[in-house]
Image (cartoon, rainbow, N blue to C red; front, top):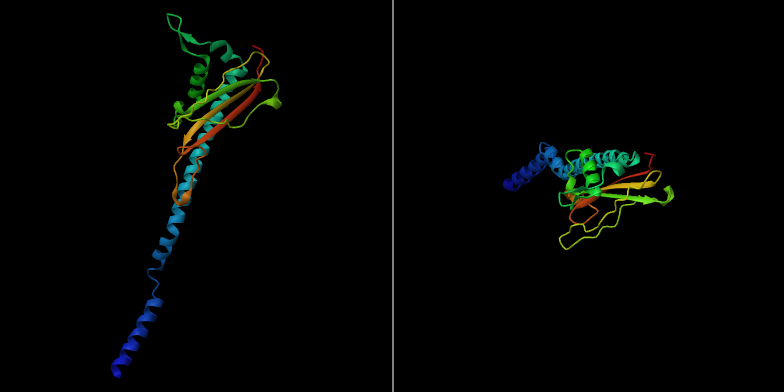
Length: 195
């Protein structure tokens, strides 16, 4: 009888001691909150870098559009021919190179697409992200226009960047295109000056 009483007393004391002990509570609480906290930090970092890339694309678009606005693109980007008269570089390629020179260094020129079109007036300017078509390997197959217009023309310059994204923890994903990619778009609509 004494023995059963001692065991019950020991169990009661053990339960009370375990319930009162809070030394591991902080570690347990952190283990519960850590995945969400890490997911938020990764998401904030990825969004910040994407917005930084978007701002770099906006700046490059304004710089490239100024070449068309002032007539420099129309006068200087006429294509490059080799000694046999074969075109080695089109005016669109020259304009893309000029736009690439304005991109931040962490953006790759190979992921940039340039679309320059003439419109009849400002209200008919298309500033939406274009619809893309893909081949079986996931590469974009669209061919974009390059029509910088003449003096007094209303021109839409769109630079489109294929930004690679990472799938974050807890299902966070910024991609809006196949292959974990997000299309960034920067647009400038202007009426060209007299030149």
